[in-house]
View 1 (cartoon, helix red, strand yellow):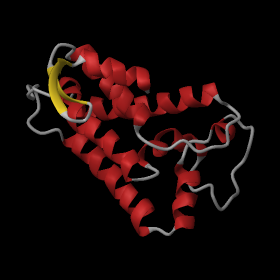
View 2 (spheres, rainbow, N blue to C red; view 1 turned 30 degrees about the vertical axis):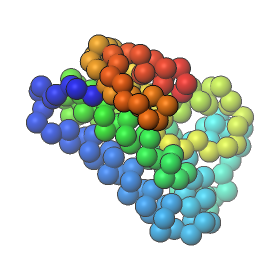
View 3 (cartoon, one colour; view 1 turned 45 degrees about the vertical axis):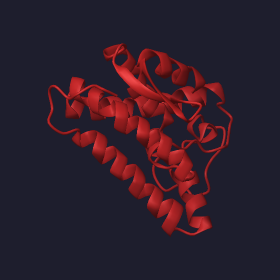
Length: 180
């Protein structure tokens, strides 16, 4: 985007969130073996059936108290191509939202968006036993805040993955939000 920072010098929270997401992915997706990776997805992922008391995790898989999974799921990704687009969106749009809110408020906002994403997912399928992982819920909140704060700022979009085209932020971001 063509939107410079006005109130903060460095987007510390945005960079820290990206670093944590990549560190968790490296540990769970690259370093860990397949069974440890799956145990992490189940243990840190948000499982609606567990959240709504329709199912229980095996004690060995209950890595943390269940309410924390409303947040932890957003730091676990199933693969590099699941992680990378989320982090690109966070890098491009998170800095300006952090600039508008300040560091601490942005962190709280991000975590609340993650929790809201899990809750909505759970309400849609409360008996689902499939773990939800990924930062898409939190990123959707950041993107929505960006559209509200900066709807007319130009963002570069690759049309057909080849042609760079500057568009007002609300056009591609509303399409992305709809797709999410």
